[in-house]
Amino acid sequence: MMDETAHLSFITPGFCAGADQNQAELRAPAIRGQLRWWFRVLGGDAAAEKRVFGGISHGGGDEKPQASHVCLRIAKQVPLYGKEEDLP
Image 1 (cartoon, rainbow, N blue to C red):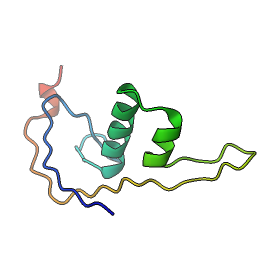
Image 2: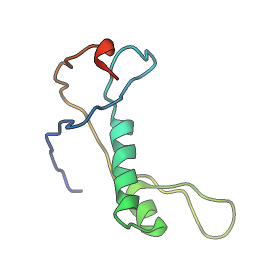
Image 3: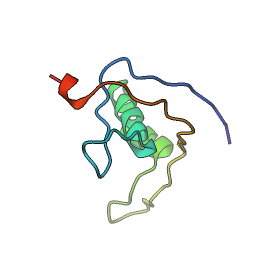
């Protein structure tokens, strides 16, 4: 297993919220979803996407569900600045 650490920051507005839509919340599944989206945009095919990010079985044949090889943890969140009224 390969272990990588990355320090990330938003350079554009990040609209992230959990159950409370008025409170910003950065969650690992949201980041994984963004990575998956960029994987597709940059030309990854469906088979490669399933190998990297996992996928479900579609009913017949030899196809089996596969767990994701991407595991994300958010260790530290820097406090967010700005207010709801700052949004356009």
